[in-house]
Amino acid sequence: MLALLFILFGGLAIGCALAVVAQRNPLYSAISLIGVFISLACLYVMLAAPFIAAVQVIVYAGAIMVLVVFVIMLLNVEQEQRGRGRLKFLVPIAVALAAVLIAEVAFILVSVQEFPAATVSNIGLTHSIGTQLFTRYLLPFEITSILLLMAIVGAMTLARRGGLLSATARVIPGAQILPRSLVDPRAAPDDLRAVEADTTDEAARLMGVTDLRSHSK
Amino acid sequence: MEPQLSWYLALSAVLFTIGVTGVIIKRNVIAMFMCIELMLNAVNLTFVAFASFFQDVVGQLFVFIVMTVAAAEAAVGLGIIISIFRNRESLDVDEASILKL
Image (cartoon, rainbow over all chains, first blue to last red; front, side, top):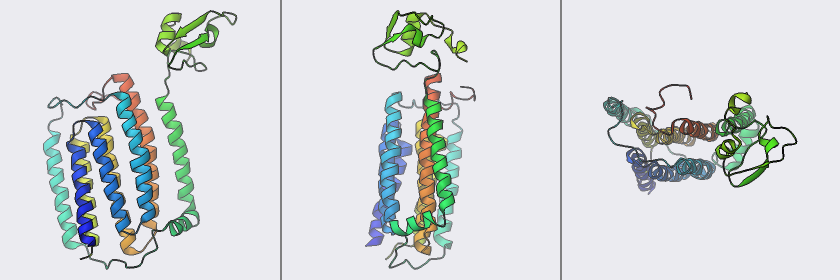
């Protein structure tokens, strides 16, 4: 019975993984990747790890894939064109590499010593994981939190729309009416002529600001 | 018949292979990114399989930390992808051959 479930979910995972690579539209790849995550979560349940299975669905299939799909839709990614790349020699290398790794799988199946599967197990429960995580492995946990903080700061720094206007002023997309002195650091403080624009670029063009990039540095 | 440890290891190796192949043959940055996520998941499966068969909780703690690293990688990596797209109007890695943005 468990073997049948393993074959079902393992086959689903492999099929979805092949679809991730084979699809040319990144959105279809993302949907297939969610299929891989869900079937791996089912395998984790079979391996007596319910907490990891739940985190897999929530963090991977939930948070990370939503982020990826959001970026795909934000950037309006076009499909890959066929046969345009300069690096076509990589395809036979990839096939050879795949053959090597499949041989490695055969080696695993032949040579790995078999252990009896545990009948009763409580290692995957949230209680045991939390106990270990907050006592013996507290330092890696805290380092992980610092890593997440760095990721937040790094992502905001990277995705920030820097450029035309000064560092203290941002024109938010959507119709805005801002006093000229707020967005143009060179304007006189009592300059009350309003600037109405939909985007940062439009505001800069209406104000005739072109060299603020060098000015704000 | 119960699933053996080697079954899980073989499945993990197959998934990792598919991920490596995807990273090599794909040219779209987001598709390569998703193949890297696939490789991380293959390694997670190995960790959980060993934790289950050795009756040791440390493997699952490592999976927890790997998931955190994957989340941080997703945030920073997608920020880099947006930044590249703004500067080049393309997601093709062959176009982004110089380090300067």
